[in-house]
Amino acid sequence: MKYISTRGEAPSLSFEDVVLTGLASDGGLYVPESLPKFSQEEIASWAGLSYQELAFKIIAPFVAGEVPDADLKKIIDDSYATFRHDAIAPLVQTGHNEWILELFQGPTLAFKDFALQFLGNLLDYILKKRDQKVVVMGATSGDTGSAAIEGCRHCDNIDIFILHPHNRVSNVQRKQMTSVLEDNVHNIALEGNFDDCQNMVKASFGDQSFLPEGRQLVAVNSINWARIMAQIVYYFYAGLALGAPSRPVSFSVPTGNFGDIFAGYLAKQMGLPIDQLVIATNANDILHRCISDNDHSKKELIHSLAPSMDIMVSSNFERLLFDLYGRDGSKIKGLMEDFKSGPMVLKEEALSTARELFSSYRLDDDAMIKVIEDVYESTEYLLDPHTAIGVEAARKTRRRTDIPMICLSTAHPAKFPEAVRKAGQSEDPALPHHMADLFDREERFSVLEKDLPKVQSFIADNIRA
Ligand SMILES: *Cc1c(COP(=O)(O)O)cnc(C)c1O
Image (tube, rainbow, N blue to C red; front, top):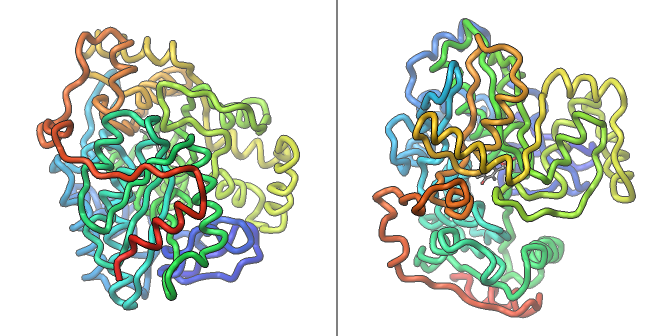
């Protein structure tokens, strides 16, 4: 399988190279040249497979010829062995034909573990085979950092450096990152905000001369194709559990960078009968505005109680645009160039296809809090703030109640005690047992000034030989 850039100019890459490459050299994102398609009979024959067995069926065509089957199976098994629930992605019912898909059973209690446990093991495998060592560098405002650290902590050939804004991430999120004490894991608490962290990372990717000879940076944010790919699996898994492919299913997805729901769109293109795909946003609603009013314009960032969806622009949307514009890279290049200086206006045909594919809805903090309250009152099930946005978006946009509506639960409520308290809970939600001692664990992190050369020399000094 070959991978091509959404902007049409960068060279096409093999699967393994695409995993080690972040942005394409033309500024685009990599996508597969063509998608595997599964027949209804084939999908039906997967009913009852374990999560790991199903993951193999879905991922294998994407890596065809590069990772032998037995190796891929081991990577998948290792990746999901760290999940606490045997079902890996269990379903819980919260209403008539309304289901919560719990994607928070992994080591950091957020859905990002699905992609990053897999990516860590995959990178380790590729690097060992090539006898190569790399440096993972990333910025985080919360969930991505801890999931990336958990994914890479056991990787011999990776040194990982994660920057977070000092004193500006939640206690749970900081502890999850900084209590990982392996000597290839480095947390940098930057004296600045999240944008400062991101700018340091961008500048470092742009000029990697500060690294020792032979090392390169690898991106583990959601522009990495392997992350999207791993997320396709749970759409099939939940669909099969609720009667697909003999009946359709719908999904509602709390959306930030558009990585998660883009995986749902791919599942549909690959043959899963999906009726509705609901884009659920918080007050940072660029995607909702785009679908409903053709208004894809930047607005100032709002800090919400569902912070993992606080984005100004959704980077993975470009992957959808590529399809909406007939996979013509030159058109996407033009669109993205224009978007630097003003709003992006979709052409009529692209907009109407997007509207056929996606419903959308936006909730601000107050509305979200009310949903946590209401759902708790009617079911005693406690939603995290991101999931609550997805549940309400599903209820507001749902067309058919005879089709199962599956709401992706992207985080455990214990990660976001502030929102849960505001929704009337008298105590912070309890962490799962295996994390009950989180606040007693030893922490290690380095506070650094907002100074690029200092950050880069810290990295260079701490890379293992
Ligand atoms: C990252 C994240 C999201 C948004 O997912 P995208 O793939 O960026 O759209 C939603 N909820 C939680 C809890 C997250 O960590």
